[in-house]
Image (cartoon, rainbow, N blue to C red; front, side):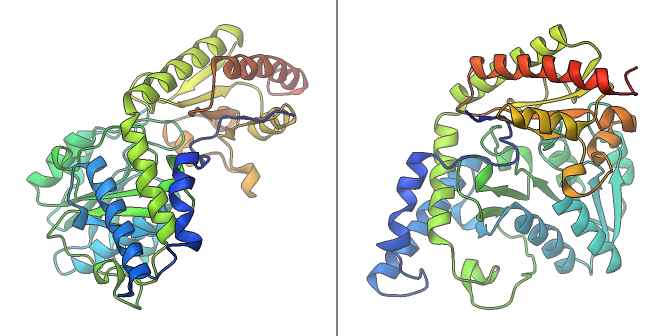
Amino acid sequence: MDIRYFDHAATTAVKEEVLKEMLPYFSINYGNASSIYSIGRNSKRALDNARMQVAMALNCSPKEIYFTGCGSESDNIALKGIAYANKHKGNHIITSKIEHPAILNTCKTLEKEGFIVTYLNVDENGFISIDELKAAITNKTILISIMFANNEIGTIQPIKEIGEIARLKQIYFHTDAVQAVGNVKIDVKEMGIDLLSMSAHKFYGPKGVGALYVKEGINFNKLQDGGHQEKDKRAGTENVAGIVGLGKAIEIAYRNFDKYNEKLTTLRDYYISQVEKKIPEVKLNGDRTKRLPGNANISFKGIEGESLLLNLDMKGICASSGSACSTGSLNPSHVLMAIGLPHEIAHGSLRTTFGDENTREDIDYLVESLVEIVAKLRDMSPMWK
């Protein structure tokens, strides 16, 4: 059975060009980047080159880039590192109710340690209120952390406007850009971003490697003791091959940015129009235009998300549900609840995120499958009858 993959927000396949760049650092240029002999220096040069590639994508200095193990680690370092380094100034942090668990659970940990966290509401499309953000700021506020683009509904926040507010109030601004990097053009200087998290496997790089941008001059505490890697901020022998892959992947992403985004936006809009045309009682979640180019989150009234996923899987279709049932929880997505969906509608949501290899024919197959499966599940559903 052919696999049709529509879950690029979860992870992406490593591009051949990226893998080719990585391979020598497993078995030929395998030196420790902290060593002074030649193969160690080769690894150090590879790290420096990757740092430059990331910096060029974000319009920052290479010395402002720190390599990590993933986006979640980057988020933890950003929030805890800033909180611990600035607790003498204040103990208040502002975030939103639709952040990734890497942010929300880090905030919960910080609350246990005496920090106060304000969780901003979002509207029906997933946008925070700028007025609510301004009203939440106090003289104890040290950090604002708002995700660039939501991983479930694709909503892109007004990042530049948030950055301007933070700068005016002299508050650090962090954004979880794990879903945005490679899909949105990002200029950290123009947007007033002080810290930014990313993860390579979201833009056709390898898993197990991420990066954190921290504006020069900002002090943050390290969370891991050990050696002096990453300017003494992230101890541990560097994953050279992974970092090389991250650098190459982000270079490719922004080299082909316009063509890639045009393709994904076209596929996304075609998919949404076909679903709305051919299946009754559906709802698009998130803003129709201010969303990630490849993201479409649609609720199907009268069905349950996990049943939908299982039926799609039998047809070789990979997608994601608005319900967390597959992780052992019966609760619907916190994002869908935050935008005001009733439980029964949130449970019947399907997130499809398109990527490089998807075609219009793939979309047609997906829509045809959905028409058949939704009709079948509705016939069986007491919620629909």
